[in-house]
Image (cartoon, rainbow over all chains, first blue to last red; front, top):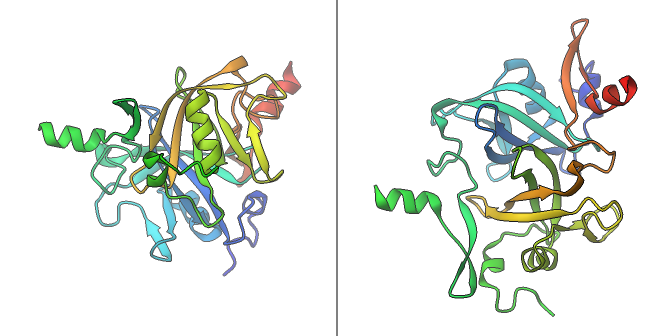
Length: 132
Length: 132
């Protein structure tokens, strides 16, 4: 079944040549940017219908119901489309407070830092783990 | 000159088959997600060196110093890399409080709404304009 059938709002979305749209998940409470992933028309339709984030895993080439293994589901509170229709912002309630597959609260735990005059990526998640 | 030369941190970034990495700009003060765009190695290196967001415009196929025409520059306060190295989060100070080329504060001004039982994209920017 073509998810575009009868769904005008889906036809407004500009999916790329792989049929995917970029999706940013932001925590509706803390405003943290949690992760960036992709959806196809079917998973976007299912996300809106079910109220939970369902992505398209490019690495595994299949539907990815976020949290299906970890229990860290994302309950979708708002769906927003950007000006040119090719990026979606999901405002979510992050179950368990953990969005990243590494166990970090969000995926962006590597800040660019200066060490001895050289730029290096830090690892706040690793540092937190090491000190605990 | 190859920007990767002598820049180990740039070699950690996983640029896609077009040589681009996805970049999310977030307002460091309000925490609003402002926009999503792309950088190549050269523009990412220049962003870090200059402290202002410099993207790669896919539609125009060229370097895009954000704000070069509008004056709405983005002063970069922090650069963060995600877990698998293919998305960057920029924490920025948005000059003029306007990130979107439409004049909206951010690009995500179209929330998915229910009208008469049908999903439609709203336009908060347009609505604001219409009522002013």
